[in-house]
Length: 118
Image (cartoon, rainbow, N blue to C red; front, side):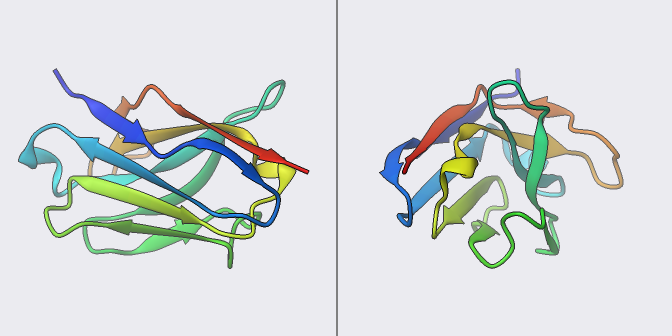
């Protein structure tokens, strides 16, 4: 059974920083793309950032210049460093895995809450 274990969410004031982490079970996922979605109350799920096994990254326009996605050397852990947080960043953040050349996520984490107070 595939597990994605997330950590690092919490409450922070506007302008602050948080770092999210996600680890996938098993080394067979090193060729998969990994990334983060988020969903705020009453809103649709939004793709935040993606990183491929070749370390190619992609960001939502709303987070460019503030968030940085990275992977560790084993390629089965992904991190999201978030700076200059805004109240609009408040959401549940979900880690995901997507197979190479896939169009949709194959596996999801359970989510971690990020709350930014004004």
